Image (cartoon, rainbow, N blue to C red; front, side, top):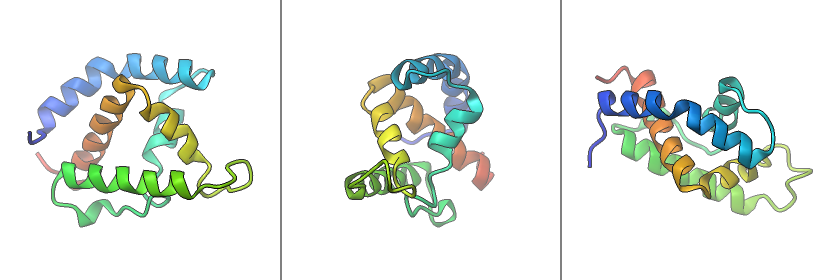
Length: 118
């Protein structure tokens, strides 16, 4: 299924508050939009993903997920490895089916917003 901007935006708006609440429950701390964006949205460099290199949101999401797995499995000592330790936080979120779907939509939205695709 091809993602379109309108569907992505609707899902995002309809589920944003529930995603923040669920994230807070998993991380056992209050989660604001800024902290969620930092946790998930700030990982392109960490995961070795260049949004500009992708022609579809699906391609970008696939590369991001592969980068996440690479960072997560290479992170031998999360308390001392500052560059990759956030991969454990993201991994915890991805274990929840609802949040995994929301993160996919979040990444698609990021793609559409930064690529200026309609």
